[in-house]
Image 1 (tube, one colour):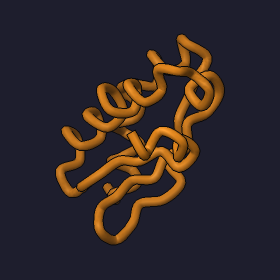
Image 2: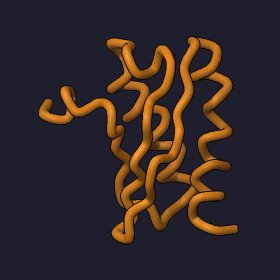
Image 3: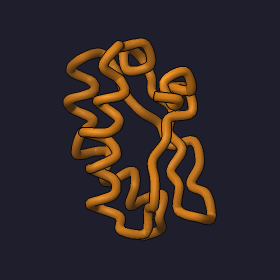
Length: 83
C-alpha cells in the first residue's frame, strides 16, 4: 500500500464524524518531506472549530496510522495558521 492509500485509510476512520457534521476532507498533496496537505470540505471549511478538528482528530489519526508523515496542514485554513 502506498503512502496516499495509507493516509486515505486513516482518514476513513474519522470521515463518519466529519460527514455527520456536513463536512469532509480531501488529500491535496503529500510532499517529499512527509507533509500531508489537506483541503477541508463542506462545513469543515467554514466551521469555527475546524482548527481543533484538524489538530485533535485528523492530524492525530493520520500521524498515528502513518508514521512516515511528519506534519498535516489544511491548505484552506491559512487564516488560522498564524495562531
